Length: 595
Image 1 (cartoon, rainbow, N blue to C red):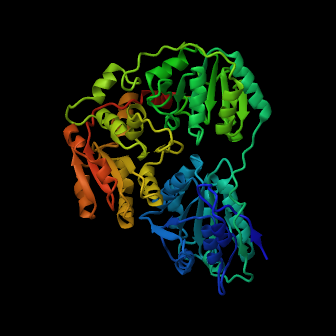
Image 2 (image 1 turned 90 degrees about the vertical axis):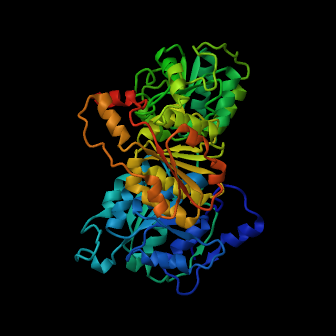
Image 3 (image 1 turned 180 degrees about the vertical axis):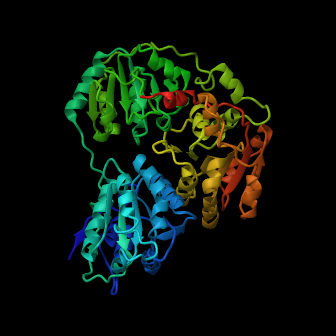
């Protein structure tokens, strides 16, 4: 009789003994099928929501979810499009720091998932992706939506955006493949794992009644290299001028890193995604380097007055390195991460240091207590209220001109939103405005942006999934009108689920990044125009509370605390100045480069 050890608690907290005993072993009942076994595994690893769209071949999985009788049963959340379901699973995983699950039927259901799965793969989001297949005897016989290897091969399509990917062609493979998928999704670097299951295998009765136990499958195994950590200590001890660059992979390490920086008076910069791990008003923070970054950070790097640059938790991507500038990628670089695969972008570095970041920096601070604290050596103006914006930028961030300046909108939101607000920024000009002007004191990673794949509409679905995972936390999605026209129907999922998500639409009747990118790059002005649409009226027609904003005075009347306390979503249609140029010049230079 098979026994499987899996940890249960999604937040990695200890369970009380009674709860632990009740969850350790679950016997599936008489007449159970393999679809029931899948549901039992999901229950045992404490998955509460599955996001998907129903269809004929995936119906056995939906049936199994409906049959469960557990007190802590799984809820099916029905998206409007399968890509939205994958984005929701992504947002759910980010909020609970555990596995997100999405599903789709065969054929177009599976292909519709791919963009959301690829986005999760690029950002290392753990996800279990379940797709259906037509019954095995129908393979290659022109069955409706056949997506087997003899037709439109969806397993082949998902091969390059998943960590584990297989078709289950025999019932005996099911359990082992499921275990492998869960382990792959949760093993660093984390990411999506895909199971393609024919409908007849879903419905196959279990010959044996497995015991599903719950203690080992989701262990977070961390590799550590003491030798490289000792070399790091020696390098920092010998250096006079050190800079820290924060990347996106700094989960739970922000406080230890900033304590290290404070102890030795080290300036800190970040990439566009790494800024979520630091208080952006901290006196040692010199801003974002790279896409839509700040002059202070750029000058600190480009002046090359430092001895060492400690790049922490970063994959050194194009957007985070100002197009892989040699000012960062040189022998002054020490690359520090908990995932060795991220070192493949820094072969020129002086040193690679592998280890769990919170413990590594806490230990480093203790080991270097005898090191002399250096005086401020970098050029940095006396701090104003933000310290990162120059006078011209501050003037725009305080402007009351009409149309409403996007600089004013994002700066105001950065100052006004409650500290615990989960902020989701969609691809497009929202990236640029938020990176540069939305300055937050939050260092817990609640500012969420997906620059790995850059999918339009990601923030819409992801914010819905996160809000469903934790409806008591404030959630804000900022998206453009182009993204909303692609994926805005997913707001009706938030309405159906009764979660208080606030969604801001940047309404400038254009694909803004395309428009301004063409202007900045000298390209022909084509393909960026969108119709003039009243998105507030559109939302109202769906029974969703909506607000139209056209001025800063109107913006100031918003009571976000009240909106975050509602029993449903709110859409805010903000008409912004379409002629304001976003701070994305370096991105345009990167596109023009042939390297």
